[in-house]
Image (cartoon, rainbow, N blue to C red; front, side):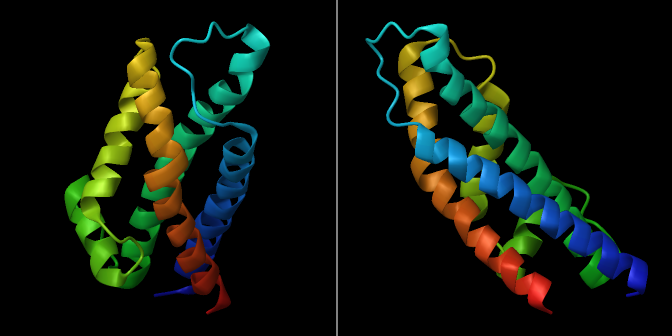
Length: 146
């Protein structure tokens, strides 16, 4: 491990923190998505921001995981599942399946237009996924203290 590795990990961790703050702001500005409501464009903007920020944080977290793996082992896993397994062993994440579900929702959120599916995805983002992302943010804060 060298100074460059530490610097890259610090940058990745700080980027995660910034994106987490943006996601938190979107969580606070949205409530449950109502399936039967005819939303105006202005009313949909906070949900669009939430979608964008969720997509972004999942990608930033995965980059952080790869950087952390390289920092700890001087190599990266070949698959996302292997990387998540390493992060679970390191205590950065609580459950691989939640992260695989997050990745799946990240892929579907921009393509699903059925209101019931959209409501389900936003509920996951605002509850289960947000709690997991908040736990990671706490771990990132601890990492930056080292």
